[in-house]
Amino acid sequence: MIGVVGISHRTATQDIRQLFSLGEEEAAEFARLALLKSGFTEIVPVSTCHRTELYYYHEGEPCDRKPGKELIRLLAEFRRVHGDHACSFFEYTKQAAVKHLFRVIAGMDSVVIGEDQIVKQVKDAYALCRGNGQAGLVLMRLFQKSFEAGSRVRCETSIQRGPASLSKVAVDHCRKLCPDLPEKKILLIGSGETGRLALHYLVKHGVRNIVISNRTLANDRALAREYQAETMPFETFREALPGSDIVIAATAAADYVIRESDLIASRAGHQEDPQLLVDLSAPRNIDPSVADLKGVHLLGIDDIQPVVDATFEQRKAGVKQAGEIIDEVAGAFMEWYDSLVLRPVIRAITENLQKIREDELDVYKQLEDEKKLNLIEEYTDRMTRKYTRVLIKNLRDAFRHHSSGRSLDLVNEIFKHDE
Image (cartoon, rainbow, N blue to C red; front, side, top):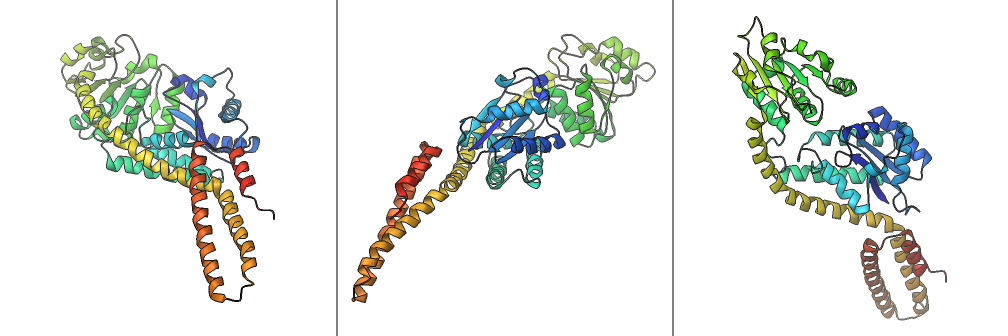
């Protein structure tokens, strides 16, 4: 049985998700231990800042129809997480699991609909497990079809049309206002979802001189390692204001973290130097009055939101079409998967019907009329093939709606030929 168990931005806060996050080496080690300690045949962990998901294949039907509980227990043990966080996890099996992976790859399950950062992250996770022998025939086929589905969704729909996040639009504005953006020094205050996305897009456009300041130092260090940035304590970020060309504020503070007096003090002696401030917070993190200071340009949510809203409507129009593509590719995969599961049974049906035919033909082989014998052989062969096709089709249809190990055992019993 195919399945996925996971935790994501839809089911848990960032603090909870971080407890179960896996680095590349940790993911490989966890996959090795999970295969060793459980009855799973294949496993691929996918871990990003928004999700940790464990895709698995269990040969046959497990005793527990939702075996993800065991994986959650193993993951908590591996990450040394205490307490019961099972309610933060989801689990899908069979076709629902297949469609979930396809939606993830297509960017339909992302914070920003249509984002493509997830594609590389999943490909890297899959390649690692495949190289380690932890992804076999079934998961190899599953992930390859997911990449096909994701590619089609992005090419055939409007799901990626235009920038659809405050962070992306803000960085695009920065590029327009600062054509030499890669040379600028950036101070990023806040490393939550919005700040993280802004950092991603800045680095993507070649910016390398970035300082991150956040109340939670652990978040800063993790981001700094990932994006090769610097960090500084939140209490001292104002010391970095004078040397920063662009300041981006994206915190959850209920009041201003940058006031007009902070800018007046930091710009003393070089008021002519241009400085761009970007406020991505609600409520505001930057005092609007700083826009009156000479050389200061303030960009706020009100300047950005209309672009985001228009883009979101365009992308939303592509979601229905994307769902149709995913249904089509998932259906093709499930046909292959059902055939794989039923292959031994289909072989038994084919071989046993042919054996019955051969046994019956032995009676007629005593006929001296070769022409009649050829006609009988041709007729029985045609009838055997016809009924074999009918039985296999009916078997696949029935198994698609009522699949279980007991069903396979029953079919084997029905079609066994011991005479």
